[in-house]
Amino acid sequence: MMNIRAAQPALLALLLLAAACGQQDKPGNESESDGEDNPPVPVETAMPVRGDVNAIFRGTAPIEAYAEADVIARVAGEVREILVEEGDEVNEGDVLARLDGDRLRLELEATEARLRKLERDFQRNVDLNEKGLISAGDFEKIKYEMEALRASRNLAALELGYTQIRAPIAGVVSRRYIKRGNTLAVDGPAFRITSTDPLVIELHVPEREFARLAPGQPVSLDIDALRTGPVLASVTRVSPVIDAETGTFKVTIELHDPERHIKPGMFARVSVVYDSRENALLVPRNAVIDDNGSTSVFVVEENKARRRPVETGYGSDGMVEILAGLDDGERVITVGQIGLKADALVTVIDDDQSDASGLADDADGDNLETANAATN
Image (cartoon, rainbow, N blue to C red; front, side, top):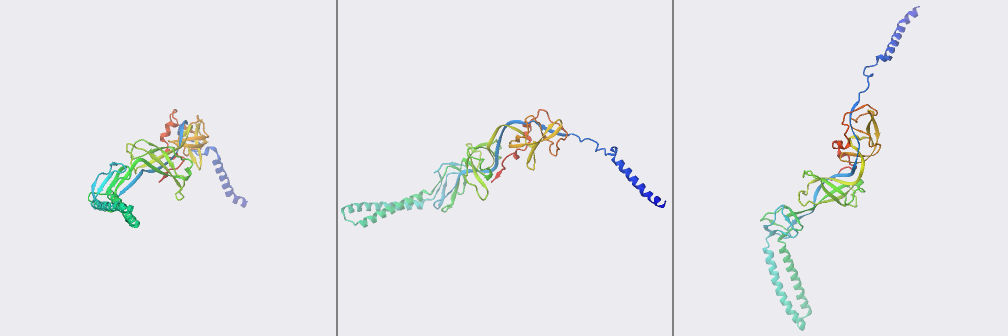
């Protein structure tokens, strides 16, 4: 009897615990939030469109002059006259400045006087040589002296001509280093001439793009300094070798600007179109989800979000080409798909007439390129 009474408190505790567990297992004790349905997720959608898409390589590079030369003084002398200023256009051979040439002129006159005297002596010796009155050795000596003096005369005339500093190329005077009265040493800089037609862009492209770029491909240039529309050009040359140090190859682009609005030194954003496809199925870039290398889109079916794995192709202007996995009539989710689960309820809040072309301007077109931008 004493053992049964001692066991009664323990038995009562077990019964209370079992009753409590039973109460928790009843449906009526579930939390109010667990019994509610998840609300629909508001989304915006667009219909795919058909259109042309380009494969574009983008890069940035400075615009350079096709030819540029520093004009130097070939003889020493004082600057007596300056005939051009910065911004003036010059032709090859035009005189840019004149140096003091008095000393060189006098040297030329003295050499010419000696040469005239020696030529008269040589002519008399020709007659004597024909009559046999002078040795052959003496006659040849006078002949060589006359030829050497002629060379000295030509050299003196050349140096005198160098006192006129001339343009080595046609172009525009982009810099003047000298002032009137300066004394220039030999090889001292005087002017810089820049040829602005054509202008060139040297784009250094990663080697993985080597097979895609070729001469003649169209190029679009966006020059921020001009604040105008794109400038059209074309690929002129593609280097046949890869630089082993940088892993890049050089692509040369030439452009002509008769109105001279484009200046050497400006930076350009370069877009090279290396392939294009017509009538491609296109969706906005922000509709495509990239998850660990796999791409997909969400479509709306019966007010639910259905995930569609897709294969993408080229992308440009805020649109991405869909190669497989999506039909023309399937409406894709463009806003609200981040974090969306498959088969979740959705509410479409956009206009029923909206399509992918109307949303293209909101997409980030800079991330669409199949090739990364190259920077010099």
